[in-house]
Amino acid sequence: MDRIQEMTVFATVAEQRSFAAAARALTVSAATVTRAVAELERRLGSLLVVRNTRQLRLTAAGERFASDARRLLQALQEAEESAAGIHASPRGLLVVTAPQMFGDLHVLPALTDYLEANPEVEIQALLVDRVVSLLEEGVDVAVRIGPLPDSSLTAVPVGSVRRVVCASAAYLDAHGVPAHPDQLAGHATVSAYGASQGGTWRFRIGGEARAFPVHSRLSVTSFRAAIHAATAGAGLTQVASYQVATPIARGELQLVLEDFEVEPLPVHVLYAEGRHGSAKVRSFVDFCAARLRAALRA
Image: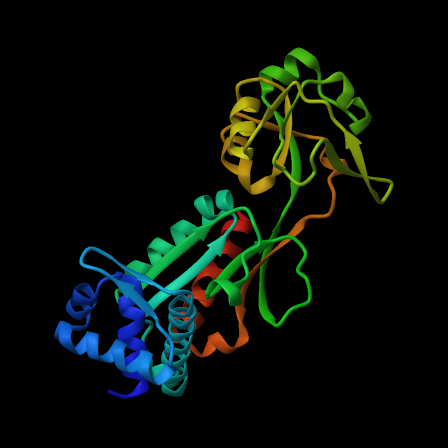
């Protein structure tokens, strides 16, 4: 058995946490899997797996080797697809990350449509409100909102989102429409306290960005909850424009202080340059970018 086959066997054992399950997944005998792992340990001079009659676990060396093996096998697949060029069809596992709410609203519909058009692709979506390292966490494609740091990643611009202030018509009828951010102190506000702006809302005054402190009697853990509260008449809230596009269109919320909005935040689709040779990455980046451009123009 050559080294690529050994890595494939070990990566499958690491994923299945069972020699027998790995053998079934690879359609080989359990004895073949056992010999491959034993030969690998002998050549490396390191114990990779500890097992008893009931369970199997990887040693620290085994965890490291499994991670490296998956990365190398992925790189090999992508090299083959790159060599095949446009004749390669998208296939294999695609790992995509995006901010949670933006992902729910705009990325997931693109993922499901892409899967329908590409039956040999599987997708793992990581929708979280943190910056995920593509290289360290094995991610193929990321959707990011906001300024990008200099990096080796390739960024495809797809549009921008605004930071807006809104409230229900009932609240504005009862308490008036603020004409300037200075008037926020006289209004009820709803803040998402996990948001990066904390207890301040940012506006653009006279061409310069300024932070205005807000004291919200209601603070919630998510923008989705803040929007629900504002829709129910709890006060003003500041969120990203894509998050309230639907309630704005339905008339459930109204925008205020539009003349004082800060510069829109750019939205990009990111990937590592070397991965663009992969048919699945190349085709998904093109597909996702087109879908997001259409959604952000709406």
